[in-house]
Image 1: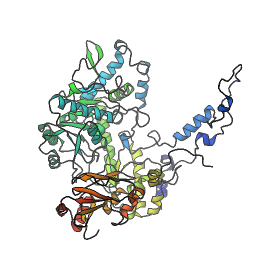
Image 2: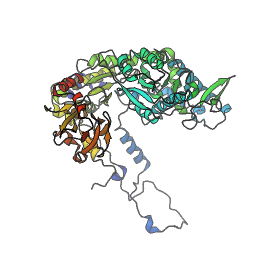
Image 3: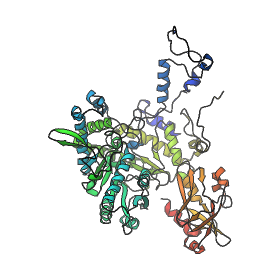
Amino acid sequence: MTAEHKITERLSPESHDGNRGLHYEENLLWEKEHCDHPGVDLPQAENISLRTGLPERGAIGLPQVSEPQVVRHFVRLSTWNYSIDHGFFPLGSCTMKHNPRLNEKIARLPGFAHAHPLQPAETVQGALRVMYELQEWLSELTGLPGVCLAPAAGAHGELAGMMTIRRAHEAKGQGHRKIVLVPDSAHGTNPATAVICGYTTRTIKTSETGRLTIESFKEALGDGGDIAGMMVTNPNTCGLFESDILEISKLLHEAGGYFYCDGANFNALVGKIRPGAFGVDVMHINLHKTFSTPHGGGGPGSGPICVTDELAPYMPVPTVSHENDTYRLEYEDERPESLGRLRGFVGQFGMHVRALAYMMSHGADGLKQVSEDAVLGANYILSQLQNDFHVPFEGPCMHECLLTDKGLKEKGIQTIDIAKALCEYGYHPMTIYFPLVVNGAMLIEPTETESKDAMDRFITVMKSIAEDAQNGDADKFHHFPESTPRKRMDEVKAARQPTLRWRETS
Amino acid sequence: MTENLKYTEEHEWIRIEDGDVAVIGITPFAQDALGDLVYVDLPETGRKLSKGDDFAVVESVKTAAEVYSPVSGEIVGINDNLSNDPELIKKSFDEGWIVKIKMDSPDEIAELMDKDSYAKFCEEQDH
């Protein structure tokens, strides 16, 4: 029996949110529509004489389509795009988690939606208060008192954070410190950020438990005299809490380095522990990952940074301050040691509104439950799939769980084939081949909003795929997906001989 | 794996020619981990390398991996055929080598792993 039969048998059709691909083709507009008749009736222009020559005004092949044709074309195309709004999305918050519609309602209030960044401060006190309150919430949740909301995305927040560290070292005559320690399991943006800031990176090795150890940290630290800081994600990209982080941060501080925490996985910790308590000096927050603002094509992103009192003078401007019932923006004139502005105006204000709406609608207790549910969901999936797939690190995990293709690879079925099988059965694949330190990694993050039913359906599909893979029909797996508008891609050809522009085929 | 080759923890194989020239490629373990290869970024001949410097990038459909020099010396040969056919890397030691390095101190080779200790190392890696 194939996975398809198993899934159909195990799930009643009404409860099965896998739709076996999509069944219609959609051509490009200029392939579908003739270009020789207009899509709109325009009145005949009278008393107009052409100033440019008629011969130059020949048809140039633009599609001629009516409004409904345009709408249909783009709506049909959009349904080829798998999204969180139409199905379970095991990539998790890295790409998109559910955006509560309440956030959207609040962001559309005219006072927020129509505010202009050049309005005088006294006319946008409410908007400034939103930013101030968001700073206060972030400060409370991270245990880091200085907050700058300006950075435009997570990676921009990383850059802002590392520039703050560099600025602080320079101010203290420690500008000779040029090395940043980065674990081998880090997000690729971490070493990239360090290099852009003029640093070179040195790798801290992940141990066989999937975590950093004090020994591996000490080995990378050396005598510490040239160390500017370290960039660590906690929980790390293996979905594990760095259990030695307190001791590691102490050693780093003793050596004179600062601890930059990549806040990408903060959604596993909110309300449970303040990162300031495990020694973090600077941290960026992905508002879309932790606080449910839109992202992934729908953005824009927003990556505030939170810093210690010691580093606060050096962080970018502006920040919002509050005195005598008045809110205002502070710039370089009041913060002379700041590294300055990183972008125009105040940051992605629309995202600030949505993030604060999320925080206030959940409250402190609700945010704590968000983390708990995210961790519970990931552990539920891990517990259900641990006998079907190889688990590289013993559980429990944090908000995401890690599986590999070990045991299946020997039968010719690899992580990529399992990902393609998920496409066939109506799911977006999980993160694959990341983190790099784990061979054939499959990283699954259900997020806090998935119901047990939704996770059970996904688990059923994954178990069915595992059974099929164990039975070793590798050829079938190598041809997945079959039911999608585009079949299995030739990735080597796509990389080596890409077709970069449209050409008429007939 | 062949008896007279040496291996590194970064999954490169090294064959010695003419006493002091190291011919370097990447091992089947690395080839397997990378998957289908799409591009090899080769260095220029004449470049001087210290032990541990990266000298080439091997790009696959999954990832791009740097290749590190296990010895110090000067690049005296590059395998141009890889530019057009990266998959040659997997074909054989004779066709799949990446660079030849004239070593400053051939005794650096002694620190590298032999066939058996490399096989053991790979086993430990595959967790």
